[in-house]
Image (cartoon, rainbow, N blue to C red; front, side, top):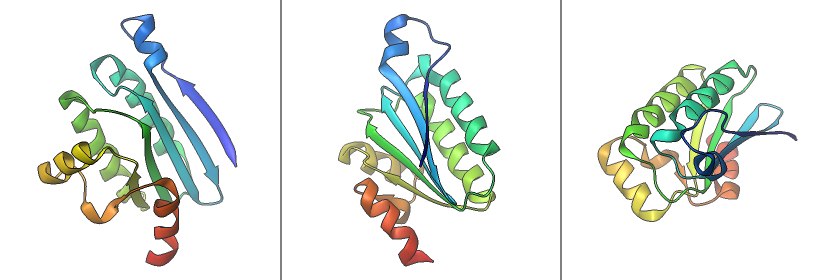
Length: 134
């Protein structure tokens, strides 16, 4: 599996740079995008860089957004989350979001930002759900 780890490059403070990272793991047509740290205003440029890299990936039919160590997603990052999901679906590719904190998951589903059927409890469940859907 190819693994590329990208710390944020533009941020307001050094502390913000250490608090957020994303990485890509790709095998065949399956791509896992892992996030860790706070997703808030200072990391919006990094989120945009992540989105651009994700869209540049070819031959991807299954994408997992893995929120392994994300406590919260700030209100100003929610439009990014909605946009990246839309663009993944237009690839076309299937999408799963996993490891969202329960309160965050409920809030995002209630807001209509994420689809309940595209959310999995953990990475293994998310990956296995693709084979069931195919």
